Length: 257
Image (cartoon, rainbow, N blue to C red; front, side, top):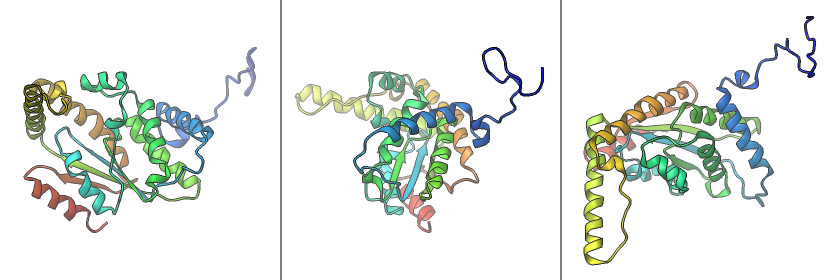
């Protein structure tokens, strides 16, 4: 069959065109996830509620690393006025909750669409700290594609990556400690009939589940974050030690940025 010939279905079986995801240097899954998000996002009426954040800080770390506790200091270091966007807080549907309870990662495309739609609003024009994204290689590639899309629009956004480091031992201890505190709180609420019960993750009650959650981070998330090497500034910060020590580590690492 001659080069460029067609089948009976009109498909060129000898075409050597490079797939767009190969040209973009990402996986097919990431390319399709981002394209699906962007095409939908462009069609949505936003009434002017769209802006490219001045800076986007992608904050990550192992379970128990204290992202929620210390994220305000990261905001301060980058002069971000809005509270962090916590990825897990966005995922409120039953399917997302069930996946989180089992310690598994939720579907990439849904997380990406929900998160990117949130941070590309005028509220975060001055900057945003994103807590807990990316978690997978596909999500990390979507961050890369978002950056390239912003550049193609002839706009700029300062992408920074901050990772809180803790050992497996510290991670497990903190997860279980959090579970103990939550259970004590719930016991008081039930005894006194005042206040609100708080959710206790299964991983906060079982050392085996807590270790598994840490390993998921090491294997899935920490590996995915390596994609950013050479693309964006990446800052690893020790989150072990006292509250004051961790705060000092954050400011010492980020103060010159």
